[in-house]
Image (cartoon, rainbow, N blue to C red; front, side, top):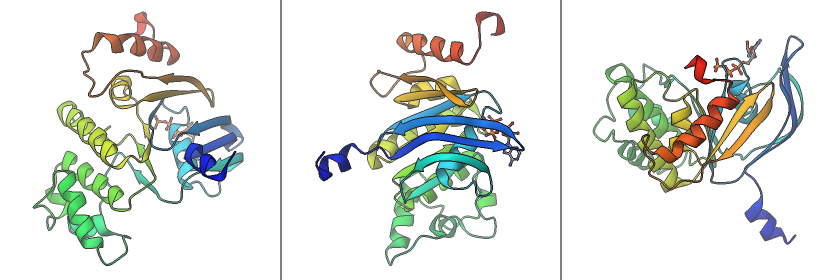
Length: 244
Ligand SMILES: Nc1ncnc2c1ncn2[C@@H]1O[C@H](COP(=O)(O)OP(=O)(O)OP(=O)(O)O)[C@@H](O)[C@H]1O
């Protein structure tokens, strides 16, 4: 393959035989996975199935955890968690700029805050933000680094239903504008279906289902054609009619 072709088709993340275990208990059991550059992928799985373990491995945040296998990921990676992790003693803009370098970092930080709808809140303290606003600031902080890969671990899990729906729109919008590869860990099947182009289910330490969601955006939660995907994902998660 010519070098430039390889460059174009090279996945952003490549895992081969990835294993991770804690105290002799295997959590990830030989995962093979490619995440193509620029794709928005969601990762579902039961509580304790290893979603965060996988995300932390890809982020390189799991030093000291026992494991093996091959893993390659881009250099510029941003991670967003369920809580915003803003430093309470720094103003919002200063939080966004933490670790950002270059003489135009300030301008980029202001632009990122404007993109997430926080223009005018640059000098606010994190304690003055609502939960949704704090997550917006966390997204702005991740954007400023212009990540090739955005890893998001249940970023909307602590938000109320209405705010969550707004944040879905924002994430999709930001993704369309910047096109990073995204791996979104979530418990919410509908969130996965509405946002992602591909949904993975982690089961018994492996990728149990790898589903392409072939519907145009923006998607509606009420789209009956999404129902079929929902059924398949719920079945893969072991949720049957009796459990609903
Ligand atoms: N640092 C650790 N030490 C010991 N065990 C751990 C550690 N981190 C994770 N585990 C265990 O590994 C398993 C997978 O945890 P992980 O947090 O990856 O699951 P998860 O799918 O993200 O769960 P949830 O959806 O509840 O957040 C769990 O049984 C957990 O107890």
